[in-house]
Length: 526
Ligand SMILES: *[C@@H]1O[C@H](CO)[C@@H](O)[C@H](O)[C@H]1NC(C)=O
Ligand SMILES: [Zn+2]
Image (cartoon, rainbow, N blue to C red; front, side, top):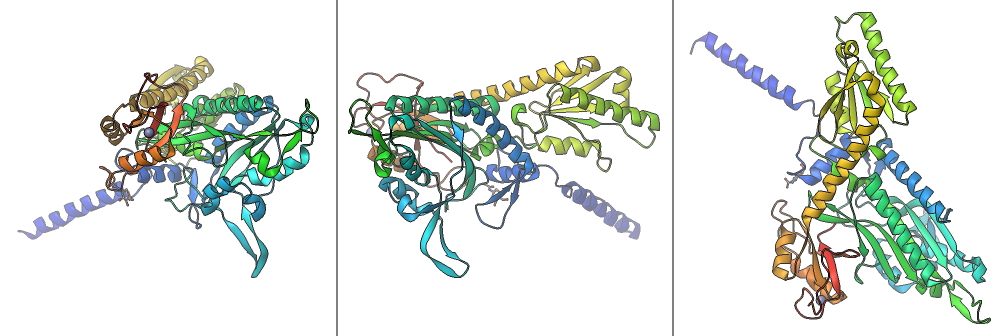
């Protein structure tokens, strides 16, 4: 081999080396595919879209403005709706005494392993350890008891927007399972069972609207099984969502009827208006929706380019990016271009659209395209010098990647229409996904097969806790096909209000033994 040839060889290797480094180095986008490694994909999406920053206490995360703004949209809608029902906001302390916390036996039994306790102030041990609320039934109800003397003191309808702490030891995931999370918790007390029961469903409807109308996430409404209901309550209603990428369901929000169980423990009682001297206990509800909702939206709509935000919850709905600003572009054209972008932004904001322009000149248009795509902004508007001459611009949809050329004078109408269209498209896509993955099974064999192919399954069920335990154990797998991790057994997700099929008379439980009471939706879940 001649000297020249060796040099040539070295150089060409060097060339490829440099090429591969430059390909690897930018690391701007999502580096794994959603369908290949969901948990790594999720972690990259939430950090690179600037929703989450990691923190040095396990299971706790920083919610950055890009995520918190979604929460604010949810808050604004939900808060408005509950106020229409006469619910008022308030705030109770985050600390609860041991005696209050342990008053309701089955309630504390469920929460005890996850309760965080304050035992010291500085180096001094407290005389009585104090718990941090995992939920506020036991915080609020001693006070409710003070406030209720007569039926005229009812109903009490309170809500608080706050944090709670549940010190879980399962694998944490930002938004989906965290040790501290934000939520609203509503707590109401009523004179009659009917009033309370009506409210449980009114609230559940609002939860469904948050998911379906804002987050573009279809939900299945139903009642929790005895095994899965809220500890200490009478019954729990729920909205359940489905993440097809993992074949797992996720509890989206719950509305509980507590009966007068807590009222008895905390003595929330009043004199019977019809029968003086006779004491009656109040009927109570509690209901909550958490920041988990943001994780659900991310899991369901996100794609291999990153986050995909439904327009109704996007902090920025339209980003306007000037293109074709090169060194050779005459100054007056550059000024005109930026002015046009700014004009578009102003016109959209005037029509109530959350539009922003991105004039940063240290980033290329290509970089900005990737950046805003990663952050899930529903529409990108591109404007170049040529577009201005033609009185046009290009709008690019985040959900489909489709490009639409639009006339300048139709700008507002087109963008507003496109936003509504994207919102509907995301919902319809997720709805179809849910429909394709929610099936019926009448035998364990079919049930197991559907479950292992990533579906959630409605099966005839007797409703017994022991039977549900058996189903969970029976459906667990030693190893899941794609992750190598053990696959958990199926949980009762809900008894759907509208099952796919009505139970046939004489139907037998999926266990093959006792009579079935209803179709129950089972599945692996978060
Ligand atoms: C997913 O990615 C993480 C982090 O890179 C890795 O530890 C894990 O093994 C991957 N899982 C699969 C199934 O490839
Ligand atoms: Zn059974």
